[in-house]
Length: 248
Image 1 (cartoon, rainbow, N blue to C red):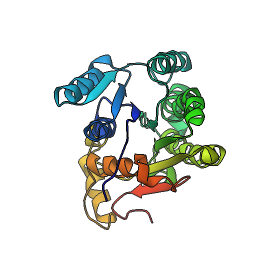
Image 2: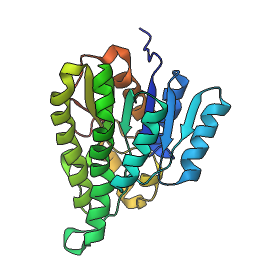
Image 3: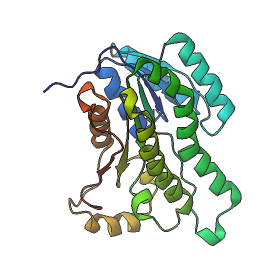
Image 4: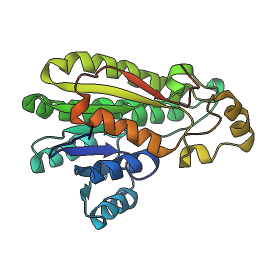
């Protein structure tokens, strides 16, 4: 079975690096027009340039996903050019780790705004056009931390757990309009974010993973590509774990 993505426009937040970059590249390879967004114009711009250089269709629209006004303006710009965003990938995320009793208001607020509230604002601004055309795919990148919790990550774990509840609720609201809403919960994936983990942490984690290895960004992108395809139309409200068996 060949997956299809007929004349689709996709928006990927946090497309400048890691998982978001991989998803953007794969969507472009499949023929989608990809809007690459990130806070850093250079990083999302480079991804869009790479896509175009390889014969794909893309443009970069940088904005800060922690700022609702910037999201609103960016979405208005996008909808003025494209009738609708068919595939929305809510991927943008940051970490500001600390133990609860030491965590500052800023560390809490910044992670919640970037990792959770951004999904709300992007979805709210783009959902009406999806509903009008009666087709859409929304894929939220959650985390194993949102399912299991993680020491030093009460902000990140809360945001990613909130994304799971958000996914299930929105899925029920828009199901009758042929829009699916799912989440992917990655485990330990080789990215810039995990590369800064102390070696002792990595060594402690690997024995706990039944597959005894960390995942790759391509593992997340492959799952995303299936959920975004025409063929995944009867899957909604689901949380897909891509974690090497660490959490079942």
